[in-house]
Picture 1: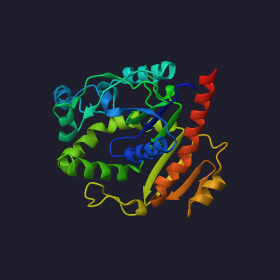
Picture 2: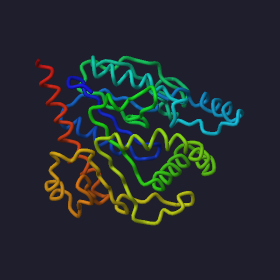
Picture 3: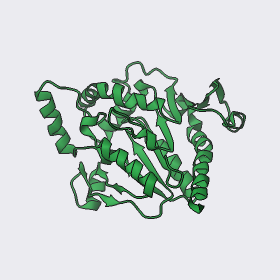
Length: 293
């Protein structure tokens, strides 16, 4: 953790909806004139698209059917930890991008499914902002979470998470439902051991819970809307949180536990703004004081 060079991370699995939280952070950064070094979690995968396909084939040929983007074998956890630690110490580091689409790849004159070259982070940034799978990951040899100053989990109910992933991968990435289902099954071991434990290390979790039937996510025709959901916001440490203010500002919200507030799904982005803005400003105030010493 660093006072002078804070690290902010969003952790959430594929299809969890981390992009919604990322958008809220970007609004806050723009409104408060905060310059963030943006780092995408997919850029710390070990293999490009073709390489991952081959790695899975090689793994399965030996009888191992659990290699996935969720686990350490397919990611650069040591490099991610080094980035968080190094940025906290010096405000510098390196990043690259994973090119998902034809459009994104065209700008780099590369194939989709490849990585851009590593490059230095921009100079004189106020914080590092990471969004991806492993912002709070911990293994026997790596502890990424210890170097975060604000760690936010995005954790939809698991059936909702699967519905979102199936719809995204079939509609925008051209996969069949069967292929996406196979990916979900292959990832399950790593999901349990490397994704889920992160949400006990987060400072705040946003968990979207649908209030419509999602019993069989593999045949769901539509993703439940925000208005068909509730959002549970859980603080690891509720001390200093002005819950009466939040209850006043977010209509139809209520406390479910001393450290948790439940809000209507349609108020999710408003809730994020109200919850996250004071935390980010506190980090910036601490940074400014540290920089004057």
